[in-house]
Length: 386
Image (cartoon, rainbow, N blue to C red):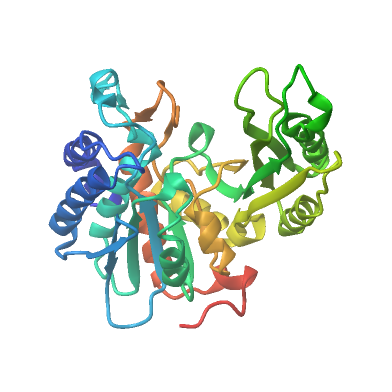
């Protein structure tokens, strides 16, 4: 019996495990809810893997790590159990499985992927060299788990990220890097009707800055620079003394990330008397195609051996913890989790028939990597010691 046959037979168990995770709501900002979810993930993993995880609590958020074998880590399997959905979302978006489609808050992003990861590793006859890391703050940008992810990934031959797939089940071989900024303007208040000339209008200064910031985008290179949340002023008859805007930057390569960062830090006030304060900077480096190319080709070959359709590949704008693993020089393949769609949306769903296929792909790919063929390291020949 093949690994695909075994996982197909275990599909009812996988669905029950996904239901347990989805019905334990875990919004990233709620550390108590995240801790409850970590308990469910830990119990599921302990049952499947025969081992308890390390429980790593950082800034109040619970992360879980299983490490197998006494030798060096070679394959990191990564995911997260936090979601964007607030507690109570199940009341309007209940867990259901109908017509071959599974629904529920966080099912696609990415609780089904967590279950697939655990079932895939459970299929390995020898888990030595495998590390499974499930974090609890990915949807916030990994503020507490970043160093944990980077240190765990460093030295691995490969990182397999069980985030949800791209459209049609495509693997994510490129992800844009992310920079996040908060620009604050300080002016001077005055009466808007009696003596506006005595004020320094923070709203007007912000308008100048927003136009300058937006001009930093370069569509030809895939660089987006988007002012987002905006606030200024106190009352309708007062010249605003303060204002601020958030800025979301997405880039395809590190050079662009550095260019935009330099330009943001070079912003200067336009109005006499206005002052600027810039906070933030690069948050996640890009996952570039060179980090995933060899792993993708390997996954295609493994899929063919399994007798399942070879997955396509896609470049996406969203970031994940795969950006961090690639950022430390570890070859990384992302989007190996659930096939479906609607992440962060009411239409979130998972295609049930694909669950055992993707779990089988992860299991077989991991086993292939553990077998010792090092061709996957060609993109980073000096990055891995084993």
